[in-house]
Length: 618
Image (cartoon, rainbow, N blue to C red; front, top):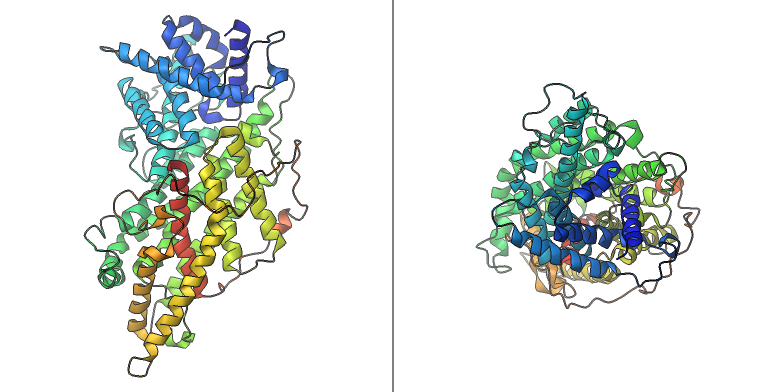
């Protein structure tokens, strides 16, 4: 590689991270000095190869060095090269901790792998990075804090040097959150021992201008208040705050069902499980209510207290390069608002799935039946429970519309400049649009179809540019067929249950008996082999205390949409004019259509998360 090629790769990297803030882990003004200070050739190759494996995706003919006709190295080859020199460098570190530049190379290489899928090598590489970060004490950078604001040049240089270390730590922290969410496993980083300030904005760091920050410790409420009080308005810091709430939402839902069915013989023990869920578990679940309320309140408070510069209010985000001293200013602004809005939607999905799961686990939702509503009047808490659950439904689906509003105001090539982790958020939003169309039975709605097409097209762009998992597109395309199958199964169960009820003393069952029978039917549908013939990874996904199966990697999926979709060219969004604010103005119907809707959404909410995990790990 020539010097001109190397310089081009460096320039492209800093152009990329102007939008992809979590990978802004180098102090750009002093980067040449950093490179000159790396004496070990292996370290330098490892770092450059890791950087260029990401930035080379942005390379176009007009950005290649003039007169350079040499064949370019693919990003796959650069990634392999970085791993080769990372491994050789680590093997040489027998008595000392690896230097920061090697950890930075590992961070970039780990990011590359995670984007393509949370497979074993990616999972383990992130773990290696976390271990080395602990060796370098990156989790304790600010354990003593600042007794006074640094003002001298030497103090500011030390603060700037520490900020580079902070950036690497928080990039690993975000990767750890993403990987553990997909794998549905514990994080590698111990949150209770994280005494490193959240990163500040590039504008302060690159000019060596001190900006106060804070630790990400305490309750959800304490976290956002600390950040607000510090004055740190960096979009990455606020995105990490929202990511912490998202993670706690996932943990809370996971804790609700952990350890319940470890000795159960599914589905033969369904009656015992139903009794547990409808009685004993309801007592255990009381303790989660306060935690969930606190989490929801903190989430709402964060959104209400976002810095003005980070709040997205429906404007067009251009991600364009400008002129003058800071050509990346517009791109940073667009990317900052984008990341906050997408992370808000991600947190919403994870937090409100607790409401969606609540009634199915506690045995509170009966399957649709021919009985009239007055037959359930003996259930004193029905109205409160149904209202409680509806809160989860509305927020779950409205989060999908949050993503729609944003993407309809972004250029179609914006995926080049944002974090590809948000491909998973886009995928969930698209899946929910399919579900909404199915449950509301509006198959003729062209608007809903266009909304789905927009989201699917956006995920396809992530796939084409960043090579996010193709399996997620296949899962999405097979979703309609699986939901149709689910609907037929429920109708058969309903008819079978109605026929069975009429044979008991010539009278239908009422009250608690109906509630228990409905719960048993639901549990059977959750764990029955016959309901999920197309997706082995979903079988037992709610009824397994260990890490859920992610299915057979060789599973095939019926393609309902063509895979060779042509994306419109050009910068400006080319979506149907009806996809404006008016398209999202209609509130969701209340009351909900029927009990089949309730049962389907509870079942499908587990399908969404299992599908996301399967797509990234299969």
